[in-house]
Length: 585
Image 1 (cartoon, rainbow, N blue to C red):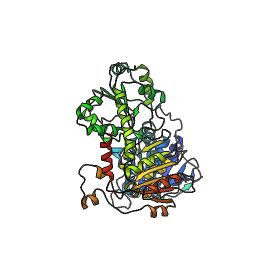
Image 2: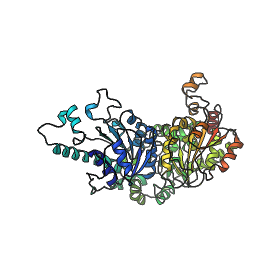
Image 3: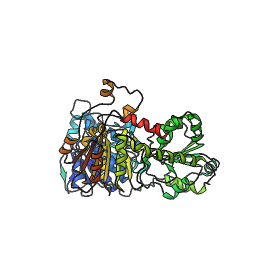
Image 4: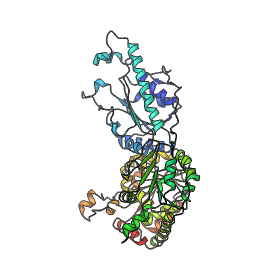
């Protein structure tokens, strides 16, 4: 087995191995050659080649999303590193343990006009768990160092002593970075400078990592909560709002206890992956009719909780955010191991523990209270479910009609990856089968990496993956299909309404050429050439009958991935969505 000759490259690879980090996504380059050689030559590592760095980083994010374990994404020097930034920000806000490794030029070649050279140290400073900037080895390319930066090797100093100090420093930095990814589930950046020659190898490794590293349990101990329990038990209006959660992240028995309390109202979202008869899964279908009501203030005050308990990741619904900022609860508690966002400008307490640790300590001490709070709003939910069914029977072919049919068609136990913008918001309006596992990049809510994330996630999921996406999101990230790792059971449903249809829903919409060009971004693109390029099965549906026929066999086993493109009219979708909320009111 070949190993790179450069000591710092050997060290970093050995530490990844010692800390059981085996998934390596590589964007090709030259400056990162020592690491490419070391990772790809060692059978311990599973290596993936993704040319486009932005796609590579989202691909790795999708893998980390599923594994709940650090994944490496590696690039060469220069602007290649900057293309990782969108995925770094997503990983930061979604708590995905992404390990960014960038090869760099030596410090003495920065800002002198050398090619593929930028200031790489601390480049992700505002959106990173830890930045490790490793020191350059002096036992490699020693003569070059003496020529260009003689201060690195003073004449009266021992080369071995200098290298020993460098190695000790690099060990500390690598350990801090990897432990941050492992313990805090945050992205970390390791920047490592290499001097040429880059491709020299040897048959043995000079360096071993410290394999005695003890990884602490991520979960903290639960604080004394008796005072919180007393406060909870004294309130007859408690609201639980759940953001992004992975499937099975919460023990069912705790959810059942909370859901069976008539003084507790539980709002979830599609991305919460929680299901119970006593929860409310479509928040906007509750709040939008209140916004349209003449008794708006009276109804909102009836919905306003005394205590708000939140957990999970970020929330999609803008309406619940607006409501809770206007009609603030007296108390807001949040549960998360590391951080709590004051989304509603009234955070009272942050329980810094894992969700199940909190529930295990909290739920046994709470008491069910008689209250009309939950049942009143469950009655409202049952009303809108009935009205929604009636409404869907009246509407013409449109985005909403299509999303209804798509949700109904999804095979049981599939993983569903949702693109952002209109896609995730439309899906929120419908009831999902409890066997489905639903994910979406809600950290930054961007459209830039949905396809790449889904492709990476599919590799570590036993069941088929269905990506539901809009046209702008799909075309923006079409390079996410440029890899050899798409599984034959990977499915893409593309709703193409010829532009950013969500902007027609937002305030300020105008039927003008400027609006169509600079907001809606009207286009006449089709996915067929892209599917041909990447050997993906392609189907097109433009009307109701074609959609229903295509969905009949779309999920059948195949020898290659499939994409179903559904063209919907662009000019009526916003009207139908507004009419829906009026109808259920």
